[in-house]
Amino acid sequence: MNYQKPADQFWEQGFLLLEDFFDAALMDRYNQLILDHFGEDPAFFHNDEFLEKAQTEVIPWFPQMEGVGAFDIVENDPRLQKLSTAILGEGWYSLYSMVMFSRQGTKGQAWHQDCPPDDPQKFNMNRLIYTHDITDETGGKTLVIPGSHRRGELTIGDVDEVFDDQLVFAPKKGTLLLLHGHCWHRVEPVIGKYRVSTNYRSATHGTPEDITDICVYRNMRYRFSDNQVVEDRLAVQR
Ligand SMILES: O=C(O)CCC(=O)C(=O)O
Ligand SMILES: [Fe+2]
Image (cartoon, rainbow, N blue to C red; front, side, top):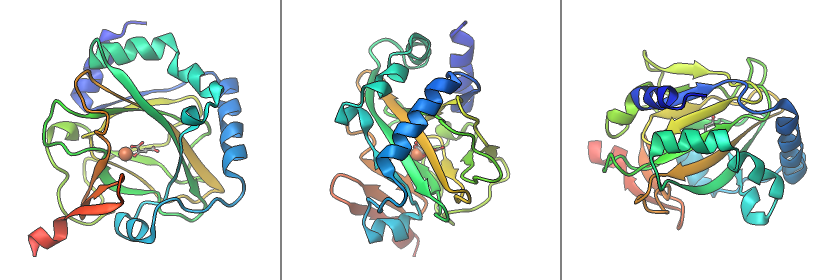
């Protein structure tokens, strides 16, 4: 595999979608581990204020922090490592892997940037893998605005606005989606029984490890470490 071309494409678009990157049997194994962890009816993790204001309904799980060794297989995939180096340069590092589970009938995720774009050099890169097909039936398609990693801060407005230039992805099992943390993105409501994605977050050398502590939504900046709205963006407008 030539890694320079896909890396250039990533920097041009702010994302890179590679289908059939991971083996279906490995994805089935991951998906089962995820379902076993969450069970039938998992409770929300975030508090009511976040759920209401962020219009984001995902329940996170950090399997590698709990020593679930199977999740090291993707982490250690030499192709993923080489691609990460081609994009992020030498000295990049893994932040953490996070599984995001959404129950049937939940909202998905509102438009956001994973970290503030105040310094264009400091960002996280999502390395998202999909362990089951996202389809019309499951809902939960991923929306991305190409090139928006260069546009600065996400504009203030409706949390689920339809943008003319948005792309809609329905990733299949085994797909890898690399996504720049400054790129504007959202997840549509979940219609099927559940929706799962797994994110091996990474960053360039010199990016602080807490880079994803503050997330930028259209209506606020939210800090996860102490569950605080650190900026009410609508108040600035009033
Ligand atoms: O699950 C997805 O498709 C995107 C999730 C997301 O917003 C993220 O991992 O930062
Ligand atoms: Fe995100």
